[in-house]
Amino acid sequence: TTTPADPLAVATQTLGRPPRVLLVGDSVAFTLAAGLVPYQDQLGVQVDSQAVIACGVARGSGKVRLPDGTEAIESLECHDWPRRWPEANDAFDADVALLVVGWPASTERDLDGAWRHPCDPVFDTWYEGEVREAVAVLRALDLPVALSNAAYWRSERAPDYSDPGVDCLNTIYA
Image (cartoon, rainbow, N blue to C red):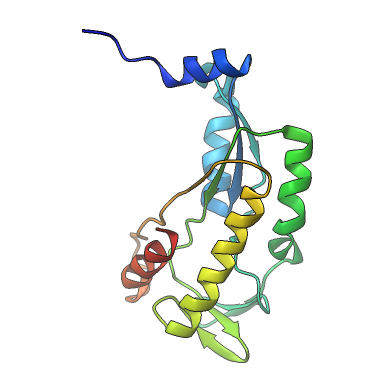
């Protein structure tokens, strides 16, 4: 029998350096980066995080409604990823992009004056376009792109519609 090659060792040997990962997405990606970046040398990878807390890939009006009914406006930075990601990669020169959007389908978004959420056909069509655009921006950098699924939100504060909403989001991400 033969021992399978260590993919990380093969990548490092092929590239002549540790593989570079451009990590983009929301607060879940931000948290993932907080756990990866301090251990890059031990893990044998280099990570550049362009993740922004509370900012996925949805743009639109920027108006969101939280589960408790509170309305908020997203930071302008949330909508700037089509410019930020390519600029960051110009300096970093990643080998792969990882898009992590952990949003648990817990908020509604204003789309053309109506509150919409995952599993609403109008929302799903619009959001799928946003996800496709995000992947296209990353692919335009000549990078393979990995996209994670959203996780279920296990909390007493999670609205009843969160799990079905996550299922709808993950259908879009597939």
